Length: 155
Image 1 (cartoon, rainbow, N blue to C red):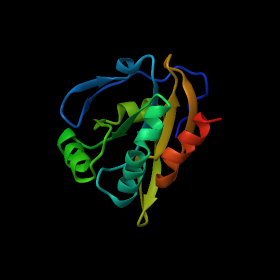
Image 2: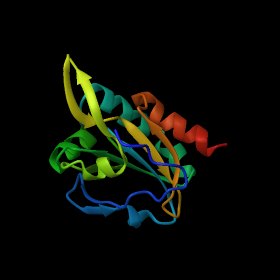
Image 3: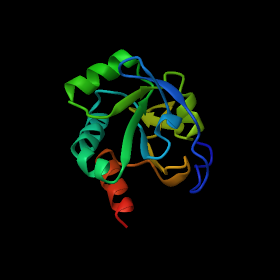
Image 4: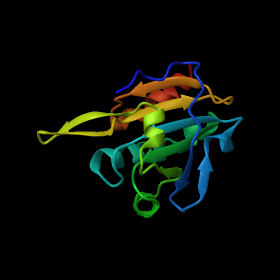
C-alpha cells in the first residue's frame, strides 16, 4: 500500500457510475462534506454490516451536512441489488478497475484463506466542503465507519 492520504491534502477527483448507471463526480458535492468509504465486495457479511451501519446513521450524518458515497469494484447491477436488498439510502459507486481506490491509496495485499491477493483495504475518508481531506480511517472495522465519522464531526 502506498503512503496514506494526508489531512489537508486535496481529495483525488473521481467520476464513477452509481448503482443506477448515472455518472457521479466528487465535484458534484462541492460545498458539502463527503464521507467516502471503500469496501471490497457488495453483499458480503462485513460489507453488509458496514453499509447497514451507515444506512442507520444516515439521519445523523445528514444533520452534520455529510453525503455518504460507498465505492467498490462491483458493477452497477450488483450495487443496485445490494442497495435494494439492504434498503440503502446513499449512493454506491462502481470502481471496477480500482483506479479511484488506488488514487485514495486503499489497495494493498490481503490474505484470505491462505491466499494472498491485491484488493481493497476497507477504509473511509472524510472530505470537507472545499474537497480537502479532513480525516482518514485506513483498515477500519465495518461497524466503526459511521460512529468514527460522527464522533469526529461532533468534536
